Image 1 (cartoon, rainbow, N blue to C red):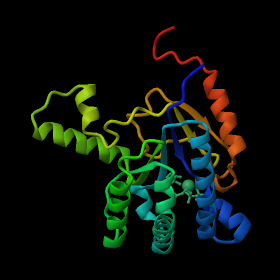
Image 2 (image 1 turned 90 degrees about the vertical axis):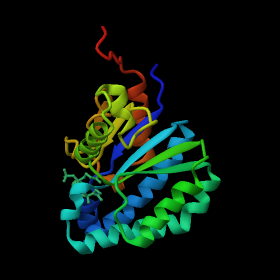
Image 3 (image 1 turned 60 degrees about the vertical axis):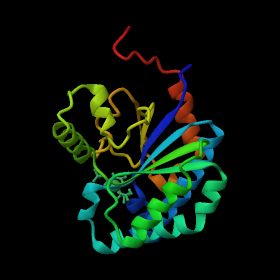
Image 4 (image 1 turned 120 degrees about the vertical axis):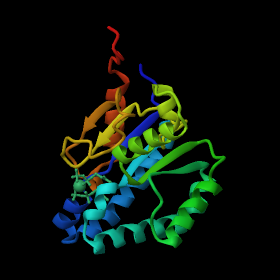
Length: 224
Ligand code: IPE
Ligand code: IPE
Ligand code: MG
């Protein structure tokens, strides 16, 4: 049986769900947040230590301003109203990606990270304005600047996932099979699950099914 330490999720399909059931992409994002809460609770119950959630990519800036504003408002309201609860549950928040948002949101994200830094129950890595290619380019720039030897170990020290083990599982909901610039280096040996359901429709039952399936996979890492 494989141990499960780290789950990464591409939470895709909010827009389509919203359009289909509420005639609004934004209401799909709102509903998607409910799934986030369910999956956080279930991760704790399943003793998962790291949960990485792809919430906004470096490419998502190409979306209409109205949708982008809605998403960041949603995040701001969520963190403002739930941070104490998150902290009480001993959850640690870490942002992956570059904090280039409004001053208010940047401050809030920094505050959430600082407040929860010592928590050890579950670490949530929230990928926000995250892009794997940008992360790798910046890591190589740093290595070059420091005249540091290029090898796996050194490169990993300059990734935003420094000190975070690689994901055991990647889940992508929303019925598309692609990585969309997410953790290209870190997913080298992850078990990948593409889920047809849209993110707001994804349930704890679906999550548990994936976890069970993962536990029985023979992971080779190149061996036989
Ligand atoms: C994923 O859902 C969430 C974000 C990118 C913020 P989408 O908004 O991409 O939903 P679809 O893929 O358009 O349905
Ligand atoms: C990936 O979803 C990014 C997030 C879930 C945050 P997208 O909906 O942006 O991916 P593409 O554009 O369909 O590949
Ligand atoms: Mg999408």
